[in-house]
Image (cartoon, rainbow, N blue to C red; front, side):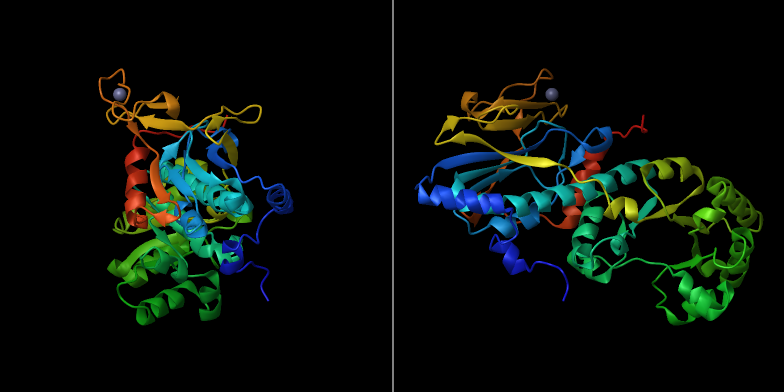
Length: 393
Ligand SMILES: [Zn+2]
């Protein structure tokens, strides 16, 4: 059997740290069922990232709905920086404490992957990026990985089950094994063209047996106009200068009239590799750097008990509002108690701030429906225009 928890076990709160179960036992014994407000925020981003993408909310709602709690959160796909309140849970602590482990796990990993995908999207600009990282992680979470890769910025995902989840068609090229078994790249290209549905783009892998330049020209001459792209997955030991290999192949293709043939690169791609190769590459397959993206270390902290602000050292107490100016997008964090619900503070640009935290669960009942992955992705793309990535220091 696979070493995974079932959905039912996760929803029952079985996947929890034992200290929550002990705390629950003590609080139940002492009859301490105070109502609390707990806040999710982030103290630091991995590798000095400038921003993160909030993701995983749809699964969190699946985990927590029907519990007697009220939940506020920023919309899935919102870009944020450190020390901004992102999610609030209001209710009796004993009603939700054992879900903290799973709740954070769902948000931290999903947001880490979405953030990495957005960084790659930002680097690639309008070039295609495809999620190829399912094979690096436990297969049980492939759909989660690829949904977040898509939301963050990928144009396509490789695993059909992941594609089903986001209502897209899976995207792929061909593995080296096909070329090995067919005997050479030309035979493999012809067989692919003969057998695979015509709506699938002809992307041929050209580094199995010979030099990239030689195989590229052979394939271009064989498939002619049907050839959409050539994929380079050149092994590390043979790479030398990848950019020069690509420039040379581009030159030779163009010289012979194959300007329409695109160059697709996979293997060890991340946002910095993308920045390096952009001038000679049309599309990227991104694997490990997406599926093994650093998680965002959110924490869940109690900030009020029975209406009184209280918190641990290093944490500001009280429920807050995360406000954003709809014109210049400036953000503001203010204690909710000081805010007049009818008149929001005014930004220096003259517009009234708006709240970014929405009520999503009202005593266990869903107040809204979850937006589609495509809608969340568009929301991410719109924000990305205002954010940038810097090179590692
Ligand atoms: Zn403003």
